[in-house]
Length: 279
Image (cartoon, rainbow, N blue to C red; front, side, top):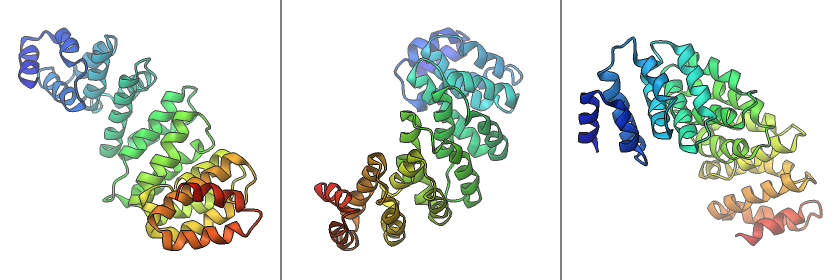
């Protein structure tokens, strides 16, 4: 694959890359983007990316990868192109755009974060999702100072009930990334958000405790889940039951006695029964 990429790039027939890369993995796309950038004048990389962005889906994916290099040439226009690609009709292009935003956020955190804040209220579900995915990619244990700005980036989206957003937030961004790598500050925000009355916000809070990172803080997690278990809305308490049975599989010695007490509480008995079905 890479030998053929080199041949096409060296010949200058970039239009042939689309057919070659169709169905290829992200590493091959990134390699092709690096080679295109190497053979393009540094002031023309952005224009090359813009040309590719008007082609077929493989060309648009390649444009996403090339915009990582083009960003230093013109950050504003690069992000504008990524915005358009983030709401592309092709899912692979949308994912590539979100992934590039994440890579850029890791390398220019303040600059890209400021631009992504404008994506929070975008009319496009896919653009809002791209902001979340980019934030997930920027979570790094070696950069604890980024945790709170990322939590604040996600905060306005917690009430977003659109399926792609909610799936990217509670069960992923919170459960698998922030609570795992920055548990102290993430838990503080979860406690704050648990005071909301919005069912979608509370769903995200409960789902944040469904990942492996909740096991080491199970006793603190139960403080929040006890409160949420009293919510009468099915959407919320079902999320609590999901968190409880997943926590229960990892820390049964703590969760099973808790659920036994809930079985004796008429306000929580339905939550306990649902959780115990899966344990």
